[in-house]
Image (cartoon, rainbow, N blue to C red; front, side, top):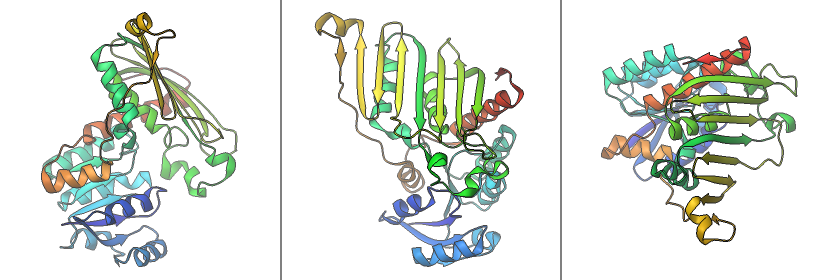
Length: 326
């Protein structure tokens, strides 16, 4: 039985992670800590767990094997290092830290204390993206020239995100730091190491952080990724396109189509709707299985550091109005 403490209800996904973990037969939620004690007390009562106002005391408890971190992003580094030094396994909401230097300090603590670290990259478990990754690796569409991902909603426009979501000090950024994490980590997973990045961020709603943003990234081998995200785009489907020297993959929401040189020979329009692979377990489940049963850590410190590197340089690029090299 894995005994897990929930650290903060700040992030909008915290209730989801608590629900997923509490529904697992081999997991027990034992306590809650929150940087806002009143919020933490109310959440602990709802979850039926203890509330611990002192983080150091929580990390010393015998009934805490692991922690799920959903604090403000600027608190991640200190909390992760404390947790690792206390021997507690770590699950964290993205992004890992606000800069690569902080990530490296966390990685040192994680590796020295032999704890399992998993960052939430849920779209890497989705069937459509597993298929696209496999198709790229198989060479069926040739060498990738352009990958475009658009991931948006209208949270800032419609006002359903919490006010603190727009605080640059705690969040580190706006649309790109939030929803833009998905196009960023998917691009790096599929295309490899980034070479340079250029960004353009704008603001439609007057908040202190951007709500509309695009980054273009060159990867080793010459492929270019276009990462688009927005908090002011209602009715926007999730778009994912991959263009190669021998074919193309188009994905709108959950509909995936592929056209290749071979498919054009046998089909009138050349488009095929492929059978997709099975979905992988949610990252929370992968984390638990890695701790209890030695399962694979697919989204660990390496992936967390890469996402932070992309974000850190994306924001430098927009702020300084220049291209940034990795």
